[in-house]
Length: 373
Image (cartoon, rainbow, N blue to C red; front, side):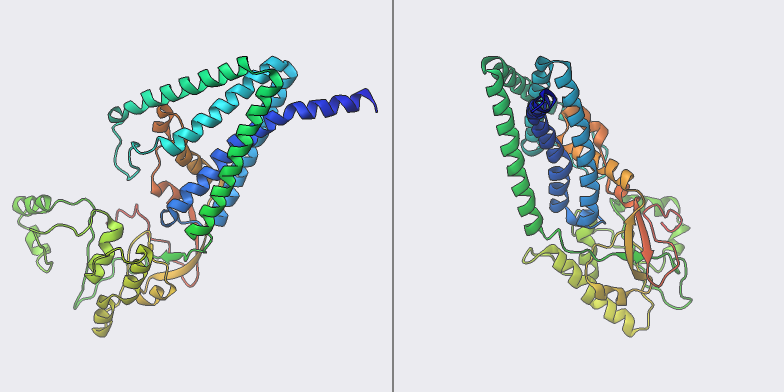
């Protein structure tokens, strides 16, 4: 056996700890985290699990390749530099895991409202404390343990935790129903400004509207009373729910969601069987719905609306989708001072949706359709 062959085998064995760390970090951030977030919020994303997996695998492969090369370079520079990078890698992995799984209860909500970060400064102290403690423990282990023993500990921790995350991710995917294909609907802008000369029945859903503003408007501009003359306005009422997702099926059905079954089943049933549809059809109304995101997943609802069609959806760009996924993961797993750069809204994902409707050439109704609003 030649010296070069022996040298290659030794080099490969030395690189294994770096491979373990690279695999652990890449898996945590770019496979486990996106999958966990997706499964916990499947209704919030327009794309199927297969699309997420393609995006996540791409990010995972890129991160793993970069980290593996960096560890190879560190090993070629000097064994001591390699040990330092191993210590840094295991500290990064542990801190990131703790930040994303045990330090999330006090994070600001991603509900579209502006975030006052000064209110959450306590999280900075928690983050600093976590990193200081973990770094002290890792550095102490690197100093106290012998070289090979420290390497074995690094491989054991990263390997076991990655295996644990893999098992958790698989069970989460199976139990959450994330593998079920989504029903994709195309809400077109057809006839959005067409009104009957005889009778029209219009429901306006206004998010975060205060009735006092409307009352004040009519007092300042009495000429508007004639415009709104045919509208029924209940000044002394409030919405049944604080979120639009819950409020709309209640408005359509008058039926409370009592948490006796899944919310998705309740939503599908309302869109499919709401008495309002039968009443309007019995009076020969044409029924149109203008909403950029229908959460119902029952195919029969297409029959209730004249401007809703089945469609296939694809990402405009997998790279842009990966960027939004990265920000979403960062908001949960990144250190506190990086989270403010990872704030994301659902509309950012929706903008990357490309629709291919069946039976309609009209463009889709979107959230930024200000002319209609």
